[in-house]
Length: 143
Image (cartoon, rainbow, N blue to C red; front, side, top):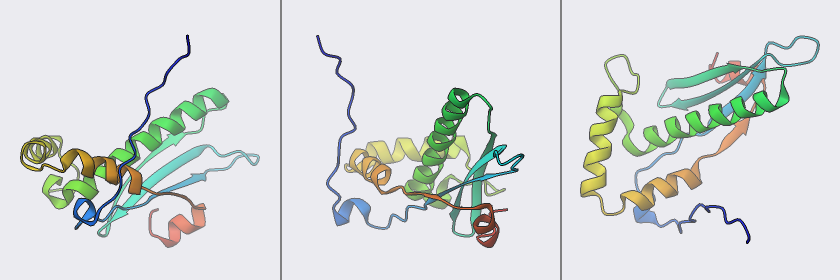
């Protein structure tokens, strides 16, 4: 018996699915080098002048470091997707993503937008990850 893995469904992007959606790229960089080895990995999204980011320490154990990297990227892809699909409607007074507002918007869109599922898959396909240096992060005012 052959093991079958779940495959992500590829969506053919149409203008009506992506209309009005601006998907911010995810910038990733390593920093705090000691003896040539990075000690901190950071990912951030720059969206309409706001910065959303997260840093993880780079573990000496390569397996743990890889797991942390996957967690970091999963989290940042979710942030990028939320900002692309909902925009300012999910931000609180401090310009942070409000889970309460996000849940409300998700429920509204799920119920009233017939293309919702296709839009979320389309945004997932449109998210780009760009490796940059710490210097480039400073130039983008991410630090």
